[in-house]
Length: 149
Image (cartoon, rainbow, N blue to C red; front, top):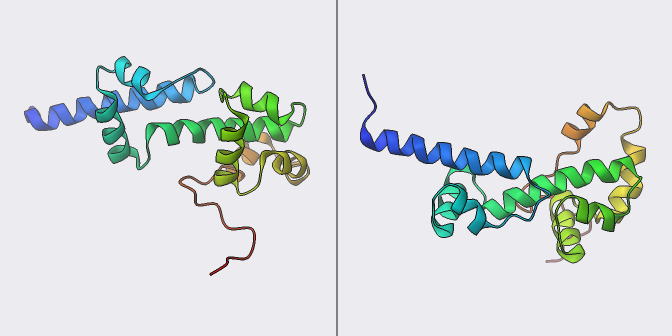
C-alpha cells in the first residue's frame, strides 16, 4: 500500500522542516538567518517561516534564539565567562538583543542569572540542571514584580 500524493508531499515537507530544526540545534552559534535556512531546503523564506510556525508553534528565529538561550544558561551557570563572552559564544551579535531575549525567556537578566544560578544548582548533576532550568518559550516567563492594571 502506498501513500497518497498529498500525504507523501506533507511528509517530505515535515522532513525538510526537521532538517532546518536539526541544523539550528547543531549550528546555533553560527550566523544563521531564515533566508539561508530556507535556501538549504529549497524553500522561500516566507514559506519556511509559515510552515515552521505551523509545525512547531513558533518562528524559526524564535526557535533559534531559544536554543541559544539554553546554551547561554549552561555557560552562565559555569560562571567562568562574562555575559558578553557568553553572548558572542552562543552566536548572538548584539548584547542588547541577547539580554532582552534572555530576560523574556528566563525571567531575569543574564547578569542576575549568572550570579544566582551557580548557587541554585550546586550539587545537581548538569544533565538534571539543564532540564530543571530549561527556558520557557514564547514570552511565558512569570512576572517577577507586581502587575499594574
